[in-house]
Image 1: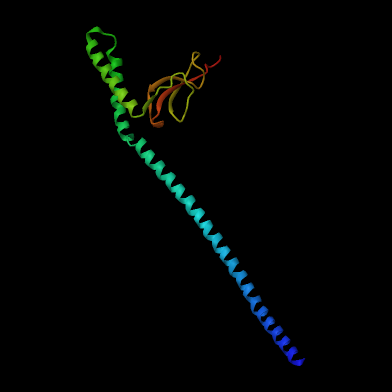
Image 2: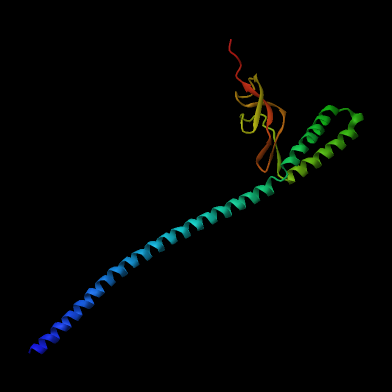
Length: 183
C-alpha cells in the first residue's frame, strides 16, 4: 500500500510540476499575444496613415498637373490683352466713316479672330455693365450718381477684365453707380 501511495504522490507531484510549468507558459503566451495584437494594431494604424497620405499626395499631384495645364497660358494671356485693347480702341476711333470702311472691316476681322483664339484657350472677358459690383472681379475707379442703374451696380466699364479658365487675370476697371443725393 505504501508503494501505491508513493506512486500516487509522485504522479500528483509530477502533475503539479506540469501545472506549475504550464501556468507561467500560459501567462507568457497571453503576454506575447497581447504584445502581438498591440504591434498588429500599431502596424495597421501606420498602414491607414500611409494610405491616407498616399491618397492626399495623389490628389495634390493631380491638382498640380491640372493647374499647370489650365494656367500655363497665364503670362501669354496678360501679353495678349493690350493687343486686344488696342484693336478695340482702334475700332472705336475709326467710327462710321465710309472712307475707312475697309480698315474697319480688316480690324474687325482681326479682332474676331483674336477673340475666337482667346475663347478657344479659356480666356473670357469680364464686361459687367449693369451687374452688381463684385470686388473679386471688378476694380472700382470711381462712383457716379445714377437714376438708371441700381446703386452698387456697374454703371460703365473703363477697361474690360479677363479670366483664364475662371481664374481672374485682370480685373475690370469700372464706374460704380450710387444713389442720387437728395436735396
